[in-house]
Image (cartoon, rainbow, N blue to C red; front, side):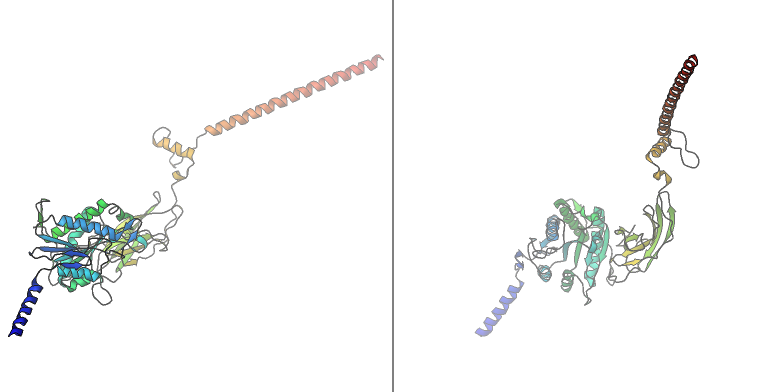
Length: 445
């Protein structure tokens, strides 16, 4: 009987211990688990410790992520009915990806936000994006939040790269935090706020104030997504519309193919402005287009990536055709090629356009300074109109001055010749007089 009694006590004690709230450890950072049924949000500052993340100029990603995460947590805690955790509270904390997901599971997280900043090979990409799980409810809820986040980033002035998924060679989510959270049935979103290595984005993240603004923006997106309200902030998002999701549909599945179509033709040629208009037609049946770049040397070198006009990444729509201008350097006959780039940074090159004329500057741009001044005077109404052929006779001021000097030189020469002639004439007269005087003297003798 004693053994049975002790066994029952041991089982009862075990059940009570398992049910009791306990502190949860994420490395050296402690949080009590949520016990009141509120919404639980976990914020994961990406990288940390020896894993610095992206480094570019004065940017250090692990520190940037922490600043954004702290600002996001502080802002979210101003809303009612929400408990917010950080996976770690120092940029110098080494923490595995698995332990971050384990922590989110231990506090019964309803959603995990993993915060990052981006870089690209050759520093050519720019814009903001959200990565989500490719599977089940985590995909659907991630997509709903991602579209809200894209709206927020657009309001800040960032170019949108969209809500995306990516798979590894095993066919599971490529990003570990999404993969491990999906295993725990925790919806998650990995936010890449912008590219720290591109001039289009650098101005959005080059101060602590900018990073805090990102954190507040992320919190606002989360509040809209969850329909939160805040008496402190005086906002109520309980009726905020989010993109509807079909429980049977998966969203934004990874595109591993190049754009299907990319063709160009000449729209117009303007030799006076040294530009050529190019009509571009390109599309991808699996994902929207994001960038284009052009070459005037047959595809040997390309411009930096340019934003595809009117691209709607959440609506998965972009215009298939548009016309853009290329400014052609002096003396070049351009051989034009275009590179069309889709949402997953895959590209297709166009056909080659050659046979275009050599672009030269208009005659007015080749005139010497004196004639340029004359043309300016004409355009302002201070000189006679240009002849019908577009040219104007050069000013004669300097030429007249030179003619007067030459005429003076001729006059001096003529005067010298006259003096010499008079001197020679007088000399001859004197010599003739002397000869006559000698003849007279001989006759007297």
